Length: 461
Image (tube, rainbow, N blue to C red; front, side, top):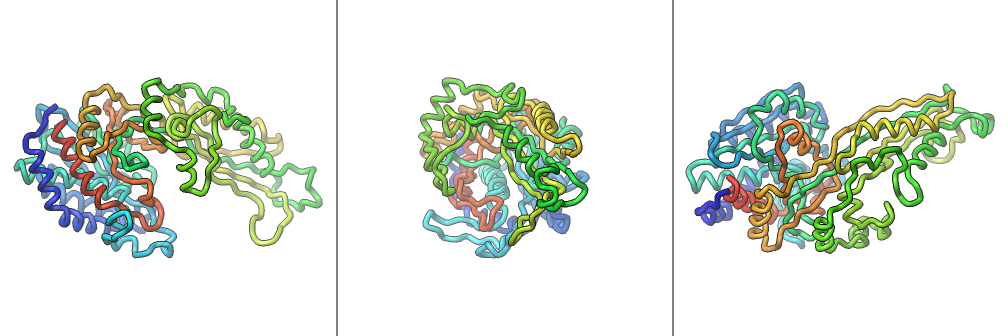
């Protein structure tokens, strides 16, 4: 690993160029690249070409590469003697509904002053255009100082992350030789809750399922059939309620196979973070944790698997009453997975559990939604220590190795398909309102994020 002797010049260039960098980000944010809505397909492609032009102007060999869905943007520099790095981000964004809750048009970005400091307001500001551009701006300043980009860089920007990444795995398989590097970098995560810089070293996987139970061939009068005919809502809630016991443990056979206990070292590191479970819940109007007994708050959101009911529907729920036994009931459920838990095995265990609760003259059907294993990174790689040191130097606070309760399947894809670990470093904050109206990205996060990547490039490239 190298330490660049001209790093201070790169950092000074980033500081001096911050106003122009913000204007470039605002131009990028004006493109409504909503990948899930076909009406915005042309805008998604426009965003891809905007990125390609920016990267080509910096000296990358950059291309927009088509898929059966939205395109990928791939940019490379020539191989070198040092460690090769693949940087991943996504340029598509979430829909903006409900529009009436926005304080300004979501694709008319602006810098706003807030009590916590200036922020960049607009859809995609934090997820993930602002984060993506921190790395691009670090490369811009590097080239300005050195006259050339670092060697061995590969940039992969996806246009379907917010709509399921349908074409990502096929693209990785077809282009593995072009994309494989020594280490992957992803900037689509947050700092620790108190604003401490962090490297996410483990992500939970995901298994999603929709369950549909049908009974009679029509809605039934509850006076004529109640107590005699099967009620699919009752069947469904009985099945779902019995998935957990009184101690918060999931009862599905084999569910905890592959779910590891915390190491003593990691437990001590997480305890040192001073996580306050009650304070965390108070941000959403709660205070009392529920879940597995005997587990800490951070364990439950970072290192333990979950079973959650995400939505349930059936019968009549409008104004007044309609006293029926519905013909159909449905629910959407999801499991967050850890360690080496097998999402396919858990899906089959759930289906068997539900079938056991369904009467013989009723039917059940299942629809799979999402299927990814957890990801755990090898922090013994010296690159993790070097990046942690670089983040600590930039932010003036010791960087932390943390877990994440969510899922970023591409990190697991890189490991399984390209054979490389991923370092997840993001500069988002808990209050960035990603996926919600009035999304924002702190100007400090944007500025110091770019400076952080410059320091990491100096240490690794």
